[in-house]
Structure formats: structure tokens, C-alpha cells
Image (cartoon, rainbow, N blue to C red; front, side):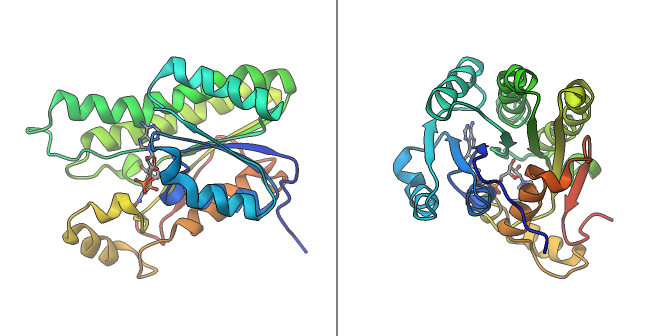
Amino acid sequence: MISINLSDKIAIVTGGASGIGAAISFKLAECGANVAIIDKKEVLEAQTIINTIEELGRKCVFICADISDFQASGNAILEILSKFGKIDILVNNAGINKDGVIWKMTEEQWDNVININLKGYFNYIRAVAPVFREQNFGKIINISSINGMRGKFGQANYSAAKAGIIGLTKTIAKELGKYNVNVNAIAPGLIDTEMMKNADESVRENAIKEIVIGRIGLPDEIANVAAFLSSDLSRHITGEIIKVDGGQYI
Ligand code: NAD
């Protein structure tokens, strides 16, 4: 029987307080990992996922930080190292959207999304890369989007950041491969989270028409792939972008 065993692994999940990040945090803990969650939300807003992980008998460290802050990212990695002694898995997941057609998009909308959705990923990779090189082991999983592969009306900032993550993933895979570090991305289609609830009803209706499986995806369905990519089962996969979208973009 094949099972995913992450016993004694230390995983970081950015944006782990809710949505896809919370599902990934839970899944990795279920597979045996202790988890450090980084989120801009206050600890009280993350209490449900923290309690759930601790009820599994795993440790959970919560750090309130904005992933777009370079200095804070380095500090968070130092804090996690001091609490756990090592880091094995980094899941870059935190993200936002600030949609608008290009002729109406403000500089602030552009900068916010690029700073969080792209620079935020760089910040954490930059901070863990020396640790992974030194220990000659690591797994990096970046959450991109199918909209980074195909583009999306009204999402120039978001699609550009998500496409940037794909280039970042492939480059870091090449740079860290010889240190036994696997670097992959997951490109979800529409997934049922708070992010989606903020979108117009028409976004949901149009997505369902595109999804050949005929329904919107669940956070747990992204978490399953994140757990696989965190595990030894995927040791010969790197630089890969895995769509998890029910066939929304074929
Ligand atoms: P969500 O809004 O439900 O959760 C995002 C989490 O990230 C929240 O807990 C939020 O507080 C945190 N966060 C946001 N900005 C942050 C910052 N600057 N610093 C630290 N934490 C921050 O969103 P979600 O749907 O779970 O999305 C998770 C990831 O999946 C994002 O990268 C998103 O772009 C991607 N994604 C989502 C969908 C979807 O349909 N939901 C589709 C494709 C890709």
C-alpha cells in the first residue's frame, strides 16, 4: 500500500490560516509533519487550524507576518529554525487578487498583487535556500494558477504574478537540483475558498461551464497534490507545473 509519510518533517505554509493554505497545513500534519503557518491574519483568526493540527498530535507554530516584507521573511525563517531546528518543506501559498481591466488598473492594484503574489514567494525561497543547500534536502511547492498559464480578462496583475511564479519555479529547480531540492508548482483552477467568494457570481457560473469535471474544486484537492509533492514519492519530479483544475484549462 502506498502512503505519504511526512513523519518528523517540518513544513512552512504561507497563508495557512485559511482556504487552500489551511487545507495544505492540515494535510501535511495528517501525514505526520509539524507545521509553521505564516499569515498576515492575527493568531485568533488562525486558531481553528492551529487547534486541528495540535489535535492530531503535531506541533504548530503561528507567525503573523506579511510575506511581501523581505526582512520579516528572514526573521520568520530564523524563528522557525530556532523552534524546530530544521525546515524540510516550504509551501508558498499566500496570495490576493485586486482585479480590474488594464485601462482602469491602478499602480497600487498592480504593486500590491506583484509584491505579495510574486515577491512574497521570492522572499521565502531566498530565506530557505541557504538552509536547504546546507542540509542537502528540501521541497518547495509554489501555488500558481491556471490564469498564469492562459491569462484572464481583468487579471493582468494576478496573471503576471502567477506566470512569474512558473518562471521562478523552473529556475529555482535548476539552481537547487544538485542539492537534492525539488521545486514544483501547482496551478489550481477555481477552488471554493474566501478568495472565490469575493468574485462575481458570473465568475463562478462561467468557471463551471469551463470545468470538464463539472464542479468547482475543493481546497483538499490541492492539498492532496501538495502532500504528494512534499513526499519522497515525488523525488524524481522537479521544475514541474501540475494543473489541478478539473480540466478547466485544457
Ligand atoms: P484565501 O483568501 O482563502 O486565503 C489566502 C490566505 O493568505 C489568507 O489566510 C490570507 O490572510 C493570507 N495572506 C494574504 N496576503 C498575505 C500576505 N501579504 N502575507 C501573509 N499572508 C497573506 O485564498 P485561497 O483561495 O486559499 O488562495 C490561496 C492561493 O491559491 C493563492 O496564492 C491564490 O492565488 C491561489 N489560487 C486560488 C484559486 C481559487 O480559486 N481559490 C485558484 C488558483 C490559485
